[in-house]
Image 1 (cartoon, rainbow, N blue to C red):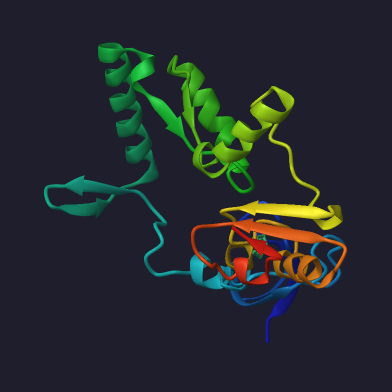
Image 2 (image 1 turned 180 degrees about the vertical axis):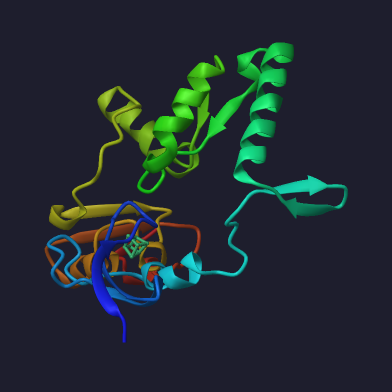
Length: 213
Ligand code: SF4
C-alpha cells in the first residue's frame, strides 16, 4: 500500500489534476483528482498511463555515446564536455546560425527552456524550434488573420461558446481541451448549441457533431 499524492499531468496543456500512489519512490497507481477545481477528476488515458512512461525500461536515464555500431554508457561530465567541444567547433567553423535549439514549448517543456535559450544566446544562434511550431501553427495563422498578430496564441472559450467549429480536431481521442469528452457531449446534447466538425474522415469527434463537413 503506497501513499497517495496530489500532482498534475504535464502531457498536454490541460494539466489535469492527478493523484498518484507512490511506493518505494515509484508510481504504482494514477487516478483523476476530484479536488482539482479545473479538471474535477477528469483525466484521459495518457494521464492514467503516467507510470508506464515514467518507469519504462527503454527510457533514457543516462548519457549514451555511439561507438562504432553500438552505444556505450558514459558519465554526465564526459557527455557535457564532449557536446560542449563539438558545439564550439561547429560555431567556429560555420557560425552560431549553424546551431539551433529544439525544445521548450508548452507545459512540461518550460522546465528546460530557460537553460536552452541561454545556451542558444551563448552560441550566437537565433534558431529556436519547439513542438508548438507544428502543434499550434494553425492557431498562430488564424490569430494572424483575425487579430492581425500571429504571436498572440489565443485560446477558444470552448465551454461557454454557442457554436464550436472543430477543424481537424479529434478531441474525443486527443483531448487538448479541458474535459474534452464532457465538452463534446454537452455541445452535442444542447439543442441551443452547434457543434461543427470539419474533417475528411468521420472521426470519433465527428460522430458527435451537429454538422460534419
Ligand atoms: S487531457 Fe490527458 S494528457 Fe492532457 S493533461 Fe489531462 S490527463 Fe494529461
